Image 1 (cartoon, rainbow, N blue to C red):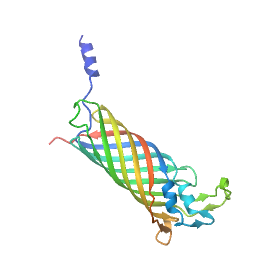
Image 2 (cartoon, rainbow, N blue to C red):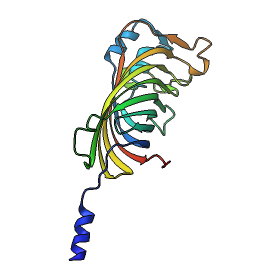
Image 3 (spheres, rainbow, N blue to C red):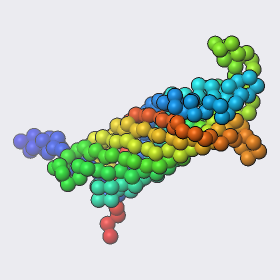
Image 4 (cartoon, rainbow, N blue to C red):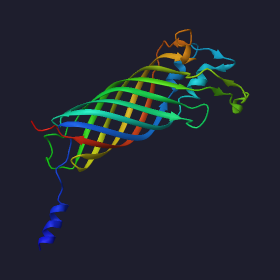
Length: 237
């Protein structure tokens, strides 16, 4: 009888949800670019390079859909609001000489609307997030594209062709808490990016290697990620 009671006790839900303290989140998922408005914005602004369209070189060659990995460090205030700093990267062609990445650095604020509304011993939580980020993309030399009639042996050697700009971020996270100190989450995000400069040669960006981007037509990046978070409660006074 005692063993049965102990087993039932161990199966009871443990109160676990967002609460006061520091948290560290590791996440990974997939990201998709929305490029059409950005392509239109670049037309007529960035010219060509050795017969290659600079618009195509950036939009088609170096804004590639692919994996997205992130590290987030935050502090939750009473289970209601959290502030976090973050760094994310979306690499491509990792083992090729044309490899590159998109990087995102910034901060976000989370709001937990369930706090105070649902039973306190729930094992899940929901948060909405908004933030501001700095975005930097760049890649190594680009080969000609035989499918477009270009010589595949021709390579542009200047490195880190890409752009930088600012982004507004929005998203939400649904978390499950197996225990108070760990949670598993699912996060869809959207980054609405306003590019500032096109780098035709990042190494010489201050010597004519950066072209200012004017006009209207932003760029968007959409992602969905799985995450694991580790939670640390404040030390007792």
